[in-house]
Length: 98
Image (tube, rainbow, N blue to C red; front, side, top):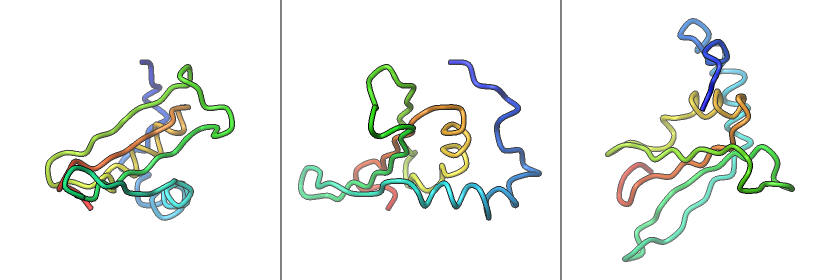
């Protein structure tokens, strides 16, 4: 996987990008839940490059958040990777996150 370093949001850009570009991007995602074993709610989100022609050949990444984290922590990363051409799929672990 080759990703251009200069296309990632820098610390200096984060404040302005978060309030404008990243939050606008995030609002365009698809967010839902499903019932896991024992009816435990599992939260997920995804951002696809082209919903009408998505195939296994498209570049995609799955982000699984860490213990006691939510996928919400990965807004900036999702924004940057999406702008690199990846479809992004995020999911909280069972009993963690949201």
